[in-house]
Length: 120
Image (cartoon, rainbow, N blue to C red; front, side):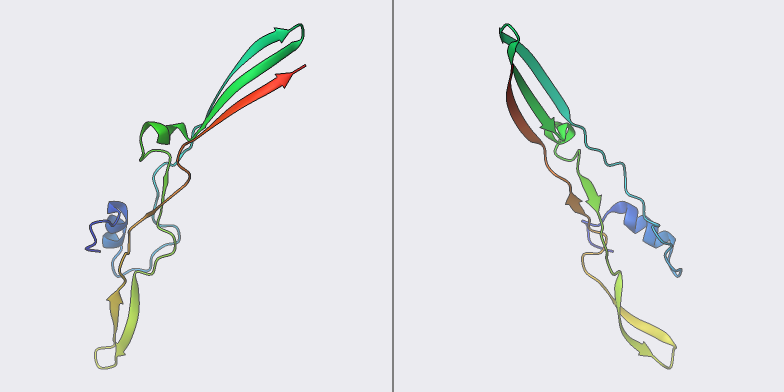
């Protein structure tokens, strides 16, 4: 857990639950939300004919700030690997896995879509 990239929340959870079996879904991720924006303008061309121009921005928050609109996923991680068992002390000998507590970003960055529709 000495990895500086490890999430502070996972360090706090593990240190607070030493010598216990971890509860299912014990770690909590922060809020993760994606907000989209749709803008459209109708232009009359002839009688009932018209053109609609539109723009869609998916994941607007990520457009404003790169750390918004993305999720942090720890996935399935093994905290340690059992190396052997010491019969005299009745203790397991284990190695700490590398990269434990480092989250992977998931989700899509912002996307922009332009649209044009002719109506009659």
